[in-house]
Image 1 (cartoon, protein in one colour):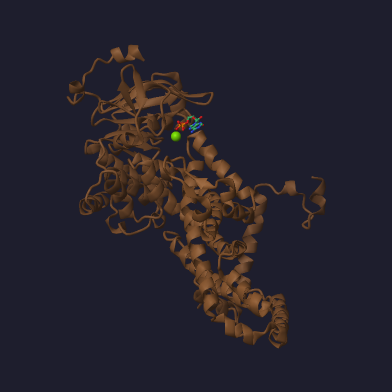
Image 2: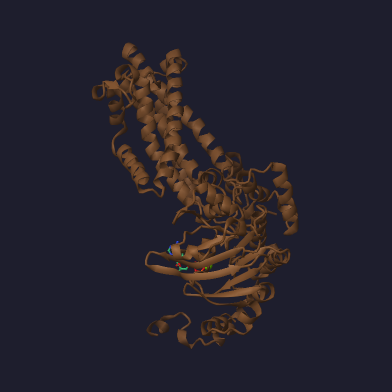
Length: 335
Length: 271
Ligand SMILES: Nc1ncnc2c1ncn2[C@@H]1O[C@H](COP(=O)(O)OP(=O)(O)O)[C@@H](O)[C@H]1O
Ligand SMILES: [Mg+2]
């Protein structure tokens, strides 16, 4: 009531009885219709964004300067880069990196799903086991885990697996590549299980009930109803994990596994072309992550079936950009 | 437990006689933590009978319905569907909870329709209908598909077989959900407020389908706030309050001339 005098109308707010707003609406509504043209004659002009153009030009200038420096500084050794880009041992290293990524992600996803289902189990012992697994593997650096697996023989010289008659020499069994697979795969499973769990929990509770009421078993419900719907939540971070895994495999160079990075290291240990060979490795990592990113987009698109709107493909996005941002565009709404 | 068992000396031969009620609930009790949701509910539903459960929100209607297909476990008492104890197996003097597979087999015979439809959004309408017949009944695909298409025709959605649920209206989704339950050829249909989530103009289509189903002789238990439907279609109405079946009687009588004070108060409030 005290503030009512400061209102622009100078009319106390509480004075506006039930007839107040109605009294005003009449003339105001009329004014709109008589003042302007018919709605069809008006041109719709969207808001201009001069700031965007300034930022874009500034960024382009920075990019141009960086590129110029990269290509004129002879120490980058682009001719050496060019030679080694198609080197056989680099190619073999790339293959090892790809294999490691694929197998470790496969271990991570399969074991991750199992762990996620365990985490959601009604059995507290099962739940705790999964929880401890995840805590342990997420709580220690993966580099340390890799070294542990690599040095398993120091801990258990003979692996018996508790089966009588079985006794394997750990030093022979745990090859560097197996240590790499175990280290990266088991570690990944811990992260994947959290992702899968979030996905499962994102699915509406009613879905599982409806499936159960129809007589589907818990397993069928999980496989046919819950997981396919959880995919929409699981896929995007899994794509990120795969890209992350591709780069994390570089750690296995400490176990002398001849992956992409280690292959480059072997070469520059001999010819001292350190920077060019690191660039070679980077180019390949970048190329593969680019391909993975594109793949990720289309996989995500596929798993959003049944949605009202699918995310636009880059081509569609580009067309949209042209439509809204060309300086020539009048901004007229679609005819 | 023992006393109750001796009170039911029915043998397996009796169970198949067809004289048994379709559903028999005896002193069903259920609590969530300290909250006692069902305080000994008794109810019998005859074959082909339509029973509507009415009552205030939170009175335990959904919980009771969900106990009938073992979506909730009971803490006391027992429920028989078509002569079989739901969810448990008698072993000597104990009732052991059945395994997942056996519970699933029992559920294939009991259809359930939910307030929020719960259609599978990643499957088309047809896939929604045939999923359980294929997986739970292991029926051949063409058989299940033929029946599914006939059911869609029956609920007036023959042209929506290939559509995804999200592209249907609420009323259409609920009719698909009913068809999905019927595709399992259940003995008994449970409805938990099937029209409560619908826009008023879509309620009629769903009730029509349910009315036709009732006329076809299906045994139905329907939790509803549609008093008109209950009066017209139900044989009997059960009024639930605070975890008890307070009043049970012919639909017309309970709704137009309730005996119990609590029923009167509730009906006065919803009218
Ligand atoms: N899973 C559950 N956990 C805890 N409380 C529950 C659960 N389900 C239902 N309840 C409680 O039980 C009571 C009865 O619920 P419900 O059977 O859904 O009632 P109605 O369907 O009659 O509205 C409510 O107080 C509700 O909050
Ligand atoms: Mg309810």
